[in-house]
Image 1 (cartoon, rainbow, N blue to C red):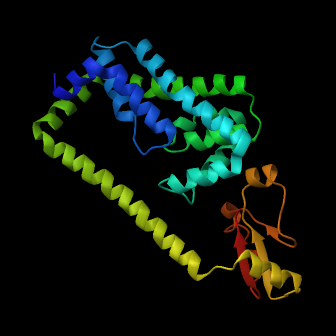
Image 2 (cartoon, rainbow, N blue to C red):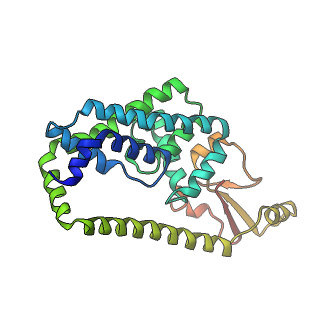
Length: 269
């Protein structure tokens, strides 16, 4: 048995709890490798799947309930904070909103399969008024489905995963360096992408005061497009006077509705 698997045998439930808790809080720490490892150890008869699922529930439900309550009390403000700390802040909320729009409250059953979206989904559930008891049931089932799927995969392929772990152990610290470098490069690429996006916005940006002044003056050379999602429009049914609503994901299909002879202003919040 490799040192990594031996460590999981000795401290597996604590490690699983810590990784799941970190992911549900919103930190970019994936719990899937630990879930696979726990499943592999269960397949070898060294761990209990029932206890592992209990650890997952104990780690995921409390932070999800906190996000749910924050969404119920301070939804928009909490979403803004989550987007700032997300690795993909420009799409994280939109993706979760679209998932909620398509599947409703049942989205809570599958949202944990999408890294980084669980805190946002819990917050949105609070915003749309999902009752606490119903949220606990759906979120708990979602955690069991998510953890059970990955641990089940590890259980089925336990022998193959142990071989992979053994091969990784042969590289020793080099394997950790490679994994750490890959993760650092991924995070750095997302940060650079975000900064480029923000620089582009600063170049082509109009302030709310300037937009209001031009609208009040009846500027006919200006067209305003509301690109908010269906979810945002339903939860916040307010819009800039005279704006045309075309959700961001529909702009390509409805491009003929965008005026070509005027200056276009897009807003999404």
